[in-house]
Image (cartoon, rainbow, N blue to C red; front, side):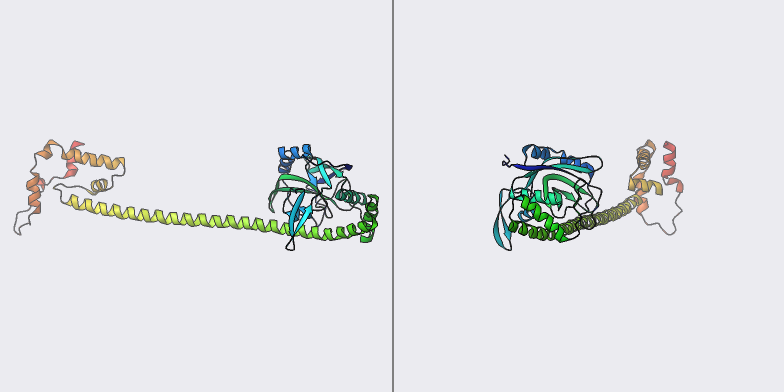
Length: 348
């Protein structure tokens, strides 16, 4: 349950996500409009609005020190190596927020009757500073996709200039400080307190500019690390593909060697047969890769099984083939050699 605070005033403001009127003083995030709409209309944002828990503070410093966008009522932070207890009293809270199709964000803030709330009211009256929303999400130079909304802080150097309450163009810092001091005194601060707050305002302005710059640098470094990680991942994938390709080449080479060895063995076996086979038949027996190879080998063995082949003196021919040929022997009658070509044609 949100603590009970009295309300000093209610303030409505607008700014454009895409009309970047500041020069060198904004984070230049490229917001995705649909993502902003989803964030604003999310159940978490709607619940925070309904329960009045989307608090804002004077400056981003407390969230920065606590390293947490959701501040507890009390937090212990380390400052220059020493623990410091912070009582986080909010100065405002968001009670409504919307964005139109042109990227114009409209939000209404309750300025609370607290010390920081009275400072915010004084700044509004003197037209110094402005609202800066607190979001989480994914950020890169190409696009910013906010996913969580945690209220608006009132800062000295807002990223977006108000469309309804632009900061006054003072001729000098003295004019600005005088206007802030007068507004603070109206909010029942003493003159000494007002002077200290004005001094703190100047210090906070410098700190917030530095904080925004550091934050932007960190975002760019993060994006560069992500890009470098993606590049390393691609290099790793290429290396894996090269290794796989080399492995496939080795497998292909081994298979080719085995195929040659198998064909050589078949050649040796076929040379011992008492029949003649042509090269196509030898290739078909050795490879047996296609239906055509199968048909040739099938026809070969079908011919061997024929009655004419069974009546031939195969053993005698084989034995004679193995005997050395006498020097003065009569020429061999070629009609006694079985030519498988003719046999194949006969039974085809």
